[in-house]
Image 1 (cartoon, one colour):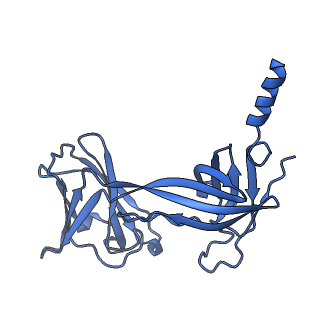
Image 2: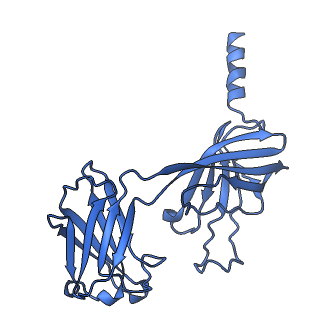
Length: 262
């Protein structure tokens, strides 16, 4: 009797709320043939696979390019079923920018002057900094990386003559380590895109590191209905953030069919 009872327990654990073993996948690999937004051929970043990994965990898969797994994305969370409705819950973190910039144009026109400090006035100690000049995409120029050393006041002077094709520079990328070993990196630009030049950078730039950037957890709920071994997304909601949230929305296809693994 004990052996029979143990077997029954294993069978119950190994089956999902649908009466089938997990994981269960629901898929739709049809490409988005009518998209006018994306100019990449065969590119479709909508969710193509929904997998119920266990009784409580799921993963959404997005595979925009069939030829490069570097573009693939996964979203993990928990799920529960209420009648024919499946409720998917996941979360992600947003954080305010860890640096602020102050721009000004001085009368001199021979160099960029970059000044580095923190918002709370904490001491900077490391003199090494990595600088990269990012060129406009249409210029077809390779970015240039330089390892440089800050002055005693933690400023940096970069003569224009030392920057090849300066007029095509869209942004300046920096990489620096704070006293606690935390790496800070970002792009100095006034354009909406770091590799698209819209106007010349001012020649005096103050980079202010935010020592303790604010963070916030965003909770997201996606609801679907299950009918005849097919999943259809019916709604998606997430809480509003007090911080800028640049995370794109998860996009779904119309319907997902159960994948036959037999």
